[in-house]
Length: 406
Image (cartoon, rainbow, N blue to C red; front, side, top):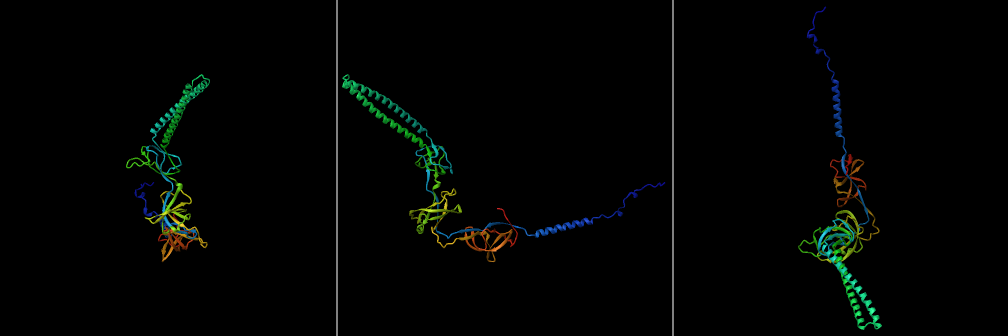
């Protein structure tokens, strides 16, 4: 029997004899992965990226030979425009219009205080009723006098009444007839008085004299209005201003040295400064037969072929007087237009960048005359192609591009 006891040395682990950890394989895998990521990032950075650009279409303009004989400027005016006022002085109690409101003929625009007029109307109506009652009374008295006269006449014919009695009743009849005529005249006067007060009552209501649009509201409830200017007081002279939008035309001042080129009825192409790209067909209505000696001009009235809600009074306009005849040999011409910002200079030549199948293509062009913000292209482009606006300096031929959303 073994009597030896275990010691602490016998329980220790001999680390020198333990196997070495196998970590070299994992390190190699990690190094390979990092290398592949770095290579991918390097090649991704080297790959060409699509450049975002703004594009525009090449526009084509076609037409006949230029027929413009003369250019001039003027303003849109209304042949029928009125500031509506009351016929009498009064206080405004109600205004039923606002700026921009369309009104019809005879539409109520405002009302004045009619308290005094209403009292006068009621008094005149009472006087008329009294005059008619007196007329009925005299008519009854006249009818009775006529019957008495006829009865006395029969008695006098049979010598049962004296001649003086007959004369008396005949006088009564003539008296009542005279009073009847005077009372009828008084009734007529009373009726005229009632009509006058009714007209004054109607004058307290301001109506539109014609159909149009309200462009100015000039009075408010509580203010005094009068058809006559009150000088420096607070009395208004108008309720509102109405313009007949169907009567709009252009007044043009033409230099008297060129007025011989303008004739009535000739075609005109009008352009509003507010809509410079909108060509409005028009024609000459009339040439005012007088000249302005201070400006050496003659006024010409130009009417629109068709009115449009965009045309407003007092707008600035330019007109081009057109020749009514076109030469038979004049062939239609077509021009291409692009924005000026699309044209660049390279090696002394005008070039543009064309968007072609998702890539940029540099193309030489022949530039023509400028037309506002656009320029005509005589050669190098076709209608409908897309050109790049404000191409970046780093843009290369064949570079990938994407069109920016508008």
